[in-house]
Image 1 (tube, rainbow over the protein chains, first blue to last red):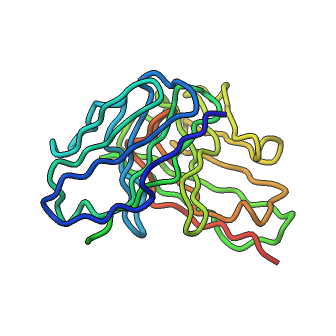
Image 2: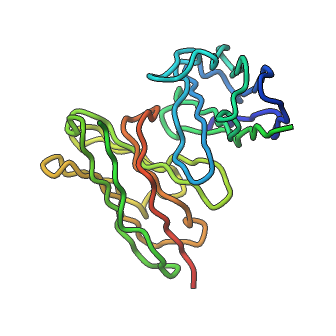
Length: 108
Length: 116
């Protein structure tokens, strides 16, 4: 099983700041990496797939990068609606697909 | 508009069974892989199972193999998860999600609580 880790666990930021979230895989997943955003009481929302391709309707302030084992999600200028939990997910290894433990972005 | 509506959750005793359903609309259900993903209270996301469009290929999380069965009825645009021999650690919100590997569309989830 591929183990995903994320850092930091919590990120304290102010609106307008640039946020950088990290995700690491225990072995190479090529570019088969997705990012999701989840707000309390809601289902997750797909932001990025293929490590860097934004999903339909996702604002350009969200960008993804990386390949192999190291990945980054960047939010260029945090908006009030961006404070949430972010999960990375690998889908290189068919079974099982695995998620990271999440990074919670909170208001400083 | 893609819509996924889960049902069938509830309170069940350890060792019991439950069948979840997901009604799909807004897309050609019979041509897409479908998945179940769960989230224990206050915890992260965990993929549970997925199924190919024809219903002939199925994949499962190791901890549910032999206990859970994913299935679909393309004539009813519906996805199912039969859960047997339930354990307390199966307590979670279960989401139905469109596609097999990444999930751009999710239902609202249905809560399964396994407790005596």
